[in-house]
Length: 78
Image 1 (spheres, rainbow, N blue to C red):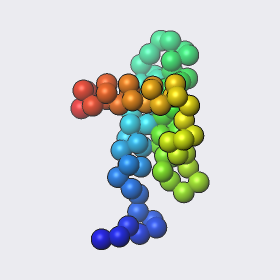
Image 2: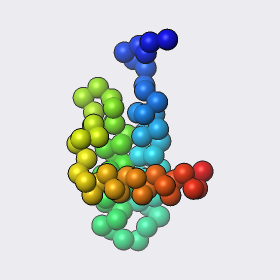
Image 3: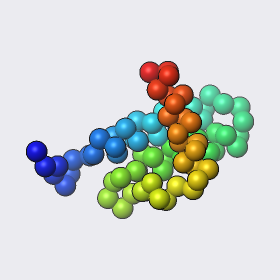
Image 4: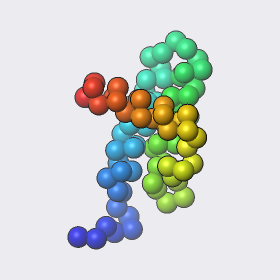
């Protein structure tokens, strides 16, 4: 079955879940720089693969590594 224009892709749904988890973690860390990074990258993931949202190419190499590392931690905690 084809996706309709108003449906969210599976990649966008998973990215949004990870992004919200990352933003929740920023309240649990004491390092302000890490908290800001979690918040910024998490926000980018919430809008990932949405119309006019972020794409994988919009992330820097460091942000991509950070997302992958956070996803590993997130999956271990689930």
